[in-house]
Length: 265
Image (tube, rainbow, N blue to C red; front, side, top):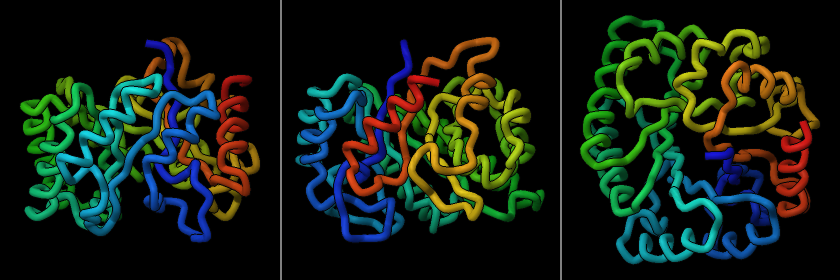
């Protein structure tokens, strides 16, 4: 498979909100907007607080999503879950929630669920082991449901490596490498993420300025050319890449500009 490029849900829609991760009022319209770009898919997301209006939570909504996905270049549904950002992964209630989401995604022929791991307690041995156990339970469950998982580990490279080593033999385990967030935690990550490459099954692309703010691609401090050189050496990456960038004044124009910036590296 050649690289497929997508965009995060809500980033093709103009909004008066300052929130980047905002569920669009009319999510289906973005499938009309994407036709004006060179992108292959839209990555869905679930919010930090449960939103029953999100089409992923109803059978009728899933039917509508299937219909829309059938008209884009890439047919896999990719969903990034934001609920776990504010609800710890090792809680029973969070596990139940994620299993329910996996159940919903099992209705699609091909699906991938992105699960962020956001915690400053992973240096604590007991807490770390609880997280590993929680990940294992989710992997076992998702494997039965034929839903691919990808964990977005928001931490320093050594913590990412430590988590990955626990699942080096698990074929259903993968990670989402967020380039902009990696820069926040490790400004010299370009030379340090080599050991993670075999686990990467998805990428989030964003740029960050010196203050850590998500900015329009190319206006920040991330060295994308160096990142892709390292990513594609010696083996070329052929997975999915989602633009999770600032939408700017004209979201469609920015989406096309972002695509060209990366294609021209």
